[in-house]
Length: 611
Image 1 (cartoon, rainbow, N blue to C red):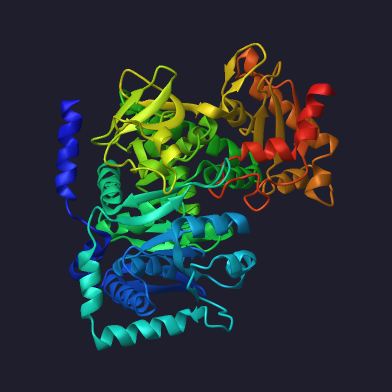
Image 2 (cartoon, helix red, strand yellow):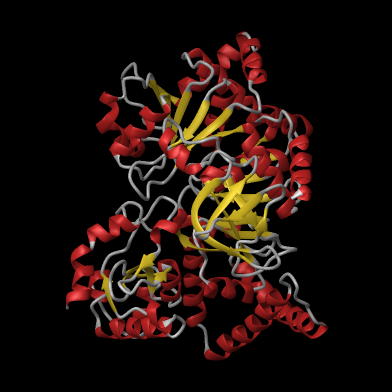
């Protein structure tokens, strides 16, 4: 314990007084010509240097001040990942305000709740698509004074185009830079830098205020884990409403002077990876699963001789990564086999998917199936787990490229205390913890106890070397009619190991045995069907095809062989539709909304027990 507190004190001293405003100033002054933010433009990129980015941020801060923003006021942001998103957020902070990115998949009533709860007086929206989500509730948001539109600003006093907003800021800053200088210098490490809202798996989202001190402690801890070089390259594609994206591609780059490339649509991620070849990449499990499915589909189309060569090479890759785990030994034989496989095939495959320069590849937000982690290990990639939540400013445990154990979420981050309660719940205490939920004293009391321990709501365990495992959400554990405690996530991960299965939900609370609701992977299923001469008019029709049902039956049986008897799925249903955030089965961070699925498919689930 003394060592943990000593490290904590060391980091706190290292980041003492640091703010986003001061850190951007340092980056711009020490590396003025370093590329900061690149937006896709035609076949290339439009890039701002750090000096240019800071100049734009100060203009935006001046514009916010000119339209009436006072220190402490909140600015709601909803747009795709693009430089303007980061610049608007930083500009609000430099004016003394607080940025709050709103999930673009939120329904109108959720948007109204968040805007009112955070007290948003200003909003920056991307264009007509975002405005359409806000439009139904705008009349009820009396506190929202001005809406700045990047594209397509409608007429009316309440709206302001981005171009006019910037022009206003330039004029005010040129006229007198003093007020903006005073504002950003008045910002302190204890001030709230952002309020992020939970993605709403249960009821209305909860606001989590995070301070400059919170985010820079996380940045310092992440920097120690990753050991990434200064001025590296990375991709921003997850929403800035997600704590991982905020830390990794908004705050960390200010310290590492990283070059952030924006991917405006997940559909373009593969192409963007090939162009950027990032040195670091974070993906939620669903992103890694989909990339694996696409790569497997490509490999399956190759001649059998080529497929066998790849399998053999991947065996050498997996052996190398697995031997490199904490406590393991990479023997000369393993090293030699890997070097040959890497030179012949693995490095080529990594280059094909844009990971030939990757030094840190990680996942979090939900459990990564073992099969997926093993697949990437076969390519020579350590896709390592980290674990945390919005309320802990992101990860508070993590593996590192130099110290990892597959199947775990790593060890406690530097200076972080963790203990396991009697019921198995993971508790943590550190400078990463939020002080509580916005306007929710009862929920705050449940979150953080009197001794400062934050209750994660997750059940976990720790091994003798300090590596943690997360079993499942405490409230999501299935308790069967026989009294057995079962993790639905473990069942689901085994089911999703088959490339045809896109999503899986295990159900069985107070029931005699588990059942499952499954969906096809919409990217893999068409290629699988074509290779077998199956014709179909829609995904729904394909889901009813006898060959597909036979294959899924085999996938369920294969999963059951890896599960204890009480965990095994007795019956299942295959749906003809994809689950997405837009159709409300998934959160914006691509986690299952179990209550929504239970309600939406109640008849199907009931039929699995009564049929």
